[in-house]
Image (cartoon, rainbow, N blue to C red):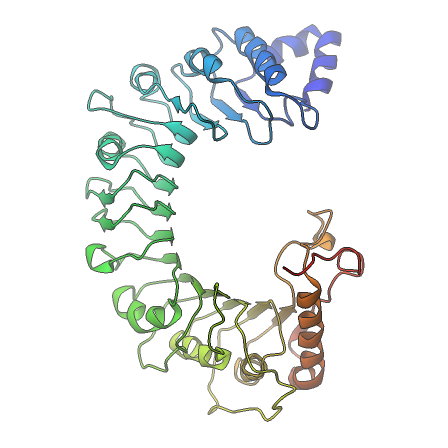
Length: 443
């Protein structure tokens, strides 16, 4: 309930006022606190302060504070007092999302040791300093930890991990002081690891035996230091990574079920190899342009991944590499027929008129005998008619022209190849959001 309506109800009902003051989950952001657009943070601080004072002596289960979109942040003087009220026995979730400021807030680790070591399950910190020491008591219930833009060294993180043996999920984002990440075998329950843009990180060494999901962006990982046989999901972005994924991953991660690959400036086509991903069911490949113009990429070479994954069920492609147009040379290449008996859904966004992409789509239509849905979208991003968004993602005039050429290529060369058992969905640019006057200008 929005803050204004809750306050009105409290004025009319003593029982509601009592239940509100005893509410065990407190979530503070610009929406729940009723802060107007471009509202200042000072009013925000005073409202939170009053509410928390009314909760003194009340056992909280969740305390979430998000300063995103709030102007004039100067709340460090309040934070220690708020945490003193919130971090009491029984607290299960703590989320402290602060904006980037010159004066970084130093999170009081002693509060974790004294009050919440047996109950805290979820911890999220953003834009603060966090310096746990060996005096930290074991956090016996902590299962999920998210550190974003947090000042913490590896020695301090190692200390924290050694006291968090129930941890199941670890998320590190822009923690620039961490140079190495060595996950000990004592983390028996750790299932998911996410590492993004920790710019000084050079070594990831993992001995946690049950890690099965790994997300990494902005780093090259030496998998010789990582136990990979238990890996079920890998989400990795790296420049020129598509070829390496095809050549190296089948042997070191043979049990993958979900593979998400991101690559910029791919310069080598995917090779045809005999190695396979026997258990791979979901494959997503995201390719993008880099700062310089790359060589034309042969999308048709991605057939290599289809051949390597006999159990594949879903394929998602996001493609933004330069290619020769089908309208320049309409003569299509053909490969020997294969039988892909499990592939049911294919979704391709950033659709364009690349000849090699048309060849790949036609190959899938001909050989994926179990295919049920083929969705082709010339745009990647939010759409207003999905119900969640007011506007589609903006695109430039150049991209709109490219999208129209891609749709023309599908109408000309692909539609006639679609079997009656396959539902083809071709998404057009939005008549409203992508009309002239609503497009981004080209750079």
